[in-house]
Length: 211
Ligand SMILES: Nc1nc2c(ncn2[C@@H]2O[C@H](COP(=O)(O)OP(=O)(O)OP(=O)(O)O)[C@@H](O)[C@H]2O)c(=O)[nH]1
Ligand SMILES: [Mg+2]
Image 1: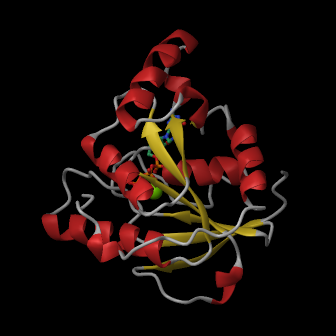
Image 2: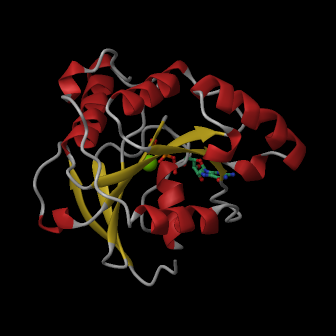
Image 3: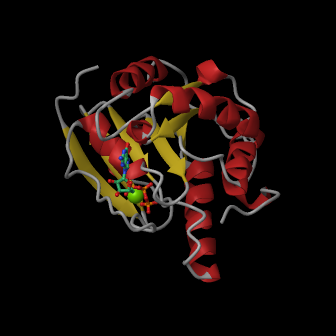
């Protein structure tokens, strides 16, 4: 898929009805600083679309971006930001869970993990959450440019084991050199032909809180 146009739509502190709501939505989730906003910029080939930072905790709202007037990319706050207060963590977790369970047009979630490290307990909780609510997801291993091919080959099995996914279910990506962007856009194109996700439950029932 070629991105002809990408634009910021709106920021929300909680899920609320919005005019573009009928469009399919694809959400980015992952811990703070893993590269969610950078991935949106890489996919849309617009380095200025989503705000990024080397400091964790940059994205603090649900930010929606329209691509080709065809679908929405949702950039969510990260979890696991150690320096955030308990109150802030709860607020962000509420935003993430609230969005994932309230969006009627959510087609898929990209669960981002840093390719250099083992997924965290929060990542595991997030993946369990997605499975629990029947929300389809794909694991994206970010920052691939920071590892050699051999190192990537060693780390992918660890990611797979920790999150109970198969190696062919993990997409390797680099927002720096564009590795994997084409494959990701291809998978989005395929996803857009699928029916919307109907989460089976209420966010408030989540067994564990993602911080
Ligand atoms: N080398 C490299 N750096 C990356 C890549 N993706 C993101 N980064 C860097 O990682 C840092 C965090 O990126 P963001 O996109 O802001 O991360 P985020 O997940 O949106 O973070 P929060 O909004 O805080 O949750 C920035 O300094 C980016 O430049 C990548 O693929 N390769
Ligand atoms: Mg961000």
